[in-house]
Image (cartoon, rainbow, N blue to C red; front, top):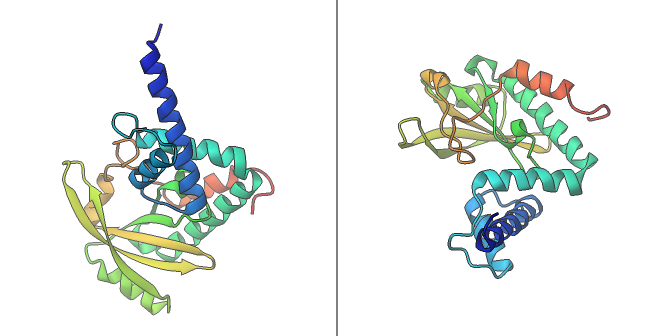
Length: 208
């Protein structure tokens, strides 16, 4: 039989996860760490030893969207995946892979479409976008690699219709090993165009 302190700890973690998920979805907070701390403060709960892991936050987001967003979430997710597929087709020469909440299904209307591109010359992506008269901004993303070392990768953010696309560029050999996911500590899940197309076809009838 579990000890009462363990039960209370689990309940506290669940409450913080639920509130953090609400903040992430409703306020567009993208940093899970910030969301957890804000949630604990709002609930007047001690943060030491009681904060849920990122995988618990991810599950709480999925539960929140299923419970409160319903059909609206399906429509939003379909729109984001449609944008992803269009962007991947446009950037096909850079072997695009979809990653993140749009792939996992936990995206909301504040989410960007995140993808990985592969080129030993990141500037080629900028030239490619410029040739198509697409306005973009540069950014840098810090990601943990398999060697447990944080590395910085260039990226390009642009908009398609109402959705934002963030394309992070890896050297071509980065195809062989995805960076570490901050959610579960495993290599990030990646999906190619065919897999994204299948995901869209498997969505509920009427989506889109």
